[in-house]
Image: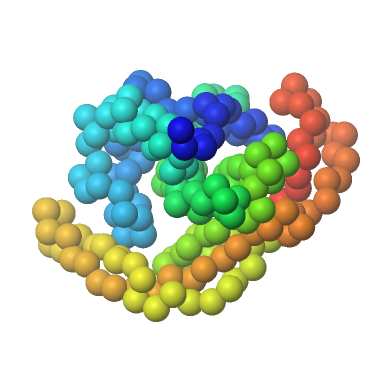
Length: 216
């Protein structure tokens, strides 16, 4: 049997990363119907509620069980509102290495949710699952994703030339998708790249003691 991640949840200061549920489907479909999600990801287009329900019910559990990675719904502690999606994929169990991708809902951007989620997953991987390497790949034009990689302490290792497809809608109907090739920037995060924990007594309330800090 292939090695695989356990079905689990990860708690950070403001967020809960948990398995997808079928009732996430409406929120997922709304989140993915965004032009930036279309442009920078390889998610299906259109991303329908029916596909979102299938992802939660069948595709994500199969992805985890096969040892390829794991998918997390990212929600706010206070409101339980869905703010994003995080996926680990291309997992190499011999090298203890995996790749992370992330999507943030348009209304939640600019709040630091993506780096908080990535750091939460990184800490879980390195401290609880004994992983030794996490990779992030960002399209050359995706400056927001590059800022996330930098904020969590990622190290840029180089450029993968013409390694991605960038998508954009053509015309007012949104029915035609135009594709073009893009370079990818490869980032890595190792256990020693994470900041050492710092005590934050004013921020350790009912969510518990958080063991990482975000970089400015």
